[in-house]
Length: 148
Ligand code: HEC
Ligand code: HEC
Image: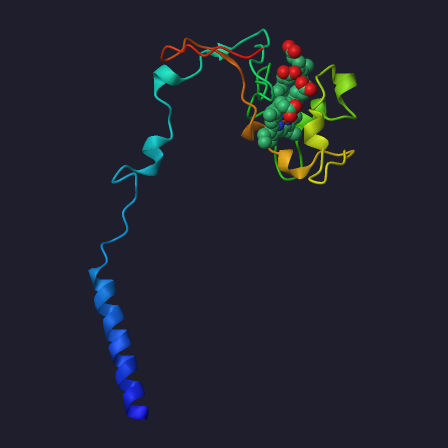
């Protein structure tokens, strides 16, 4: 009995080794292109300058664009684990003093539908959704027409 078990074990291990050897090496979808090479946007798609006037929203529920400059290195725009510069102006306790639009009600609504006093965590990384609006010529023709 013991002998059979050993034979089976040897076959299994041997079989695995053969099938492993037949696996092709894992290939990246990027091929041989180094990761850094994809990081820099080509010059023609780089934003020109932030637009001054707030772009109108074109459909219900659209993420509004950020209507001002965001200096990534300036503390007042920093989003880190301990500090959220955007909330410094847009949070409920601060927006009046800063004359900024208050962060959306949806951002204070918990999963059970109740409105919270503080921002709900899943909305913390503002720039995950909001981007600075830019004055740029469309790269391709765009015939989109908004619903409002
Ligand atoms: C120093 C204060 C201040 C800080 C910091 C700040 N904002 Fe603003 N934000 C404003 C003001 C004032 C406006 C309104 C500008 C206007 O209407 O021309 C505004 C407008 C906006 C809007 C447009 C809202 C709408 O009604 O369409 C968004 C979105 C926004 N900010 C997001 C952000 C995000 C994200 C950050 C952090 C990266 C940030 N803001 C940091 C003051 C600030
Ligand atoms: C998951 C995406 C997402 C994240 C993260 C997010 N927002 Fe928004 N935001 C939206 C959408 C979508 C809207 C428009 C619809 C709505 O009100 O929910 C909006 C609306 C707003 C508005 C306009 C409110 C109004 O009543 O017109 C402000 C200001 C704003 N967000 C600020 C912020 C700030 C500040 C943060 C970070 C603390 C943030 N948002 C994080 C998606 C996001």
